[in-house]
Structure formats: structure tokens, C-alpha cells
Image (tube, rainbow, N blue to C red; front, top):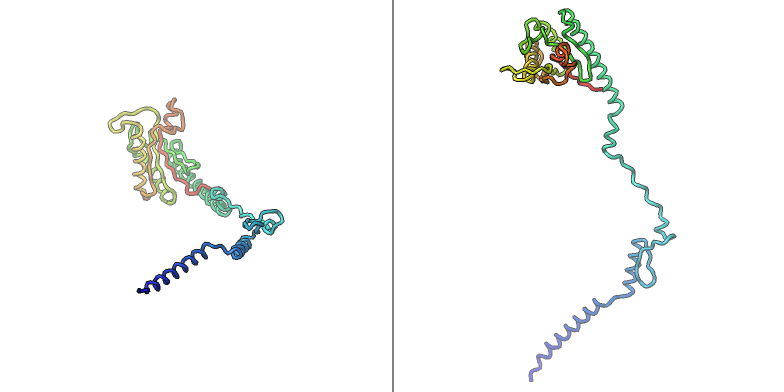
Length: 257
């Protein structure tokens, strides 16, 4: 009888035995090695191992962790908006205030020169100048001298004075120039000017066009028509309405201080 199969059977049994030994060794816990692992974990995390073999972090008073000095608090940080509200540095504010003061002096000198021109032309009652928060304001009361009633064509008698004012503004050469037209509250309804909006804008445009002939750079100038908005006097009397019919030439501030 052939018994060679016994060799194969013996090899298979040997392999199975080895497999079972490996499985058994994997499933068995080495108690001493496990306890060593617990102690190393406890030391790494500064805790302690309690009896019973369960590792926990020591939190009782008197432990090394409790006796460790507290961590310093994080530095307080100023919110961004509060830092911005602190405003510019003192030196910046000082420079800005100095520039605003110089600008005021420049405006006052230019105001005096314009008033002298109006007085020389005998029109001191029709030309007013004042330094205001928004800049130097030159006010032309338009009745009789600058425009005819309901019209937007500059009268010949006003051109010389406007030219001389324009030359002064061109000489100054720094500030933006805004020309604003205003009317009284009386309605207008002509074919050319359906309302006071068109009339006030056309009068401002006429002054801007004339200033362009004096050399003022077009890029410095802008215009607006305000109709009966922003009156400077009452519209209930002829005298008040006459003051409200005006063109204002504003040299806008560059420095607010």
C-alpha cells in the first residue's frame, strides 16, 4: 500500500499547528508589557496610574500638574475699529490744521481782491464774497446786472467784471471751481426754460463758458442748477426773491483741518 500521502498530511498538520500558535499569541495579552505601556503613557501625560490598572490623569490638588505655574494670559488686542477711531497721529493732525489755516488766509486775500474789483466797478451791492465751511463763496446777485429776467444770456455790462474775477481764479489755480445757479420760487414756463431747473442750470453754464475764455482749466470747473432750493432770503417779498436769484462761484476747500 502506497503511504506517500502521509508526508503531505504531516506537512499540512504542521502548518495548521503553526497557524494556531500565531493566532493564540496574537490574542494573548502580555500583562507585564501592558502595565509598562500604561506607565509610559502616564509619564508622557504627567498623570498617574491608579490601582486596578486603569490609567487616568491626576487632577487632585498637590499633584505636579496642579503645582505647575499658570500660563501667562494672552495679550489683549485692540479691535481694529477702535484703532481706527483713534484718528490720525498728532503730527498728521498738526500738519492738516496748519494747511487749513494757510488755506483760510489764501481765501481771505482772494475775497478782499474780489470785493475791491466789485467796488471799483460800482457793483459792491451785487457781488458778495465770504469764506465758509465749504470754501470761498462768491455770490452774484443776477438781477439787472448779470441777466435779464427769465433769461440766461450774460449782459454786456457784466462781462468785464466776470473776466477780472475769472483771471483772479485762474491765477489762484489750485482749488476746484463749482458754479451754482439759483432762482426764486416763482414758476417759469417758457419754451426755452420749462422750469426753474433749466433756468438755473443755464445761468450757471453761461458763467462757466465765460470763465473758460479767461484761461481757467475746464477740468477745474463744474456746474449745478438748484432752481429754488436753498434760498438765502425769504421768497415772500420782492427784495428777498431778488437775493435768491443768484449765481454762486465756489472755490472748494482742499483742507478741512
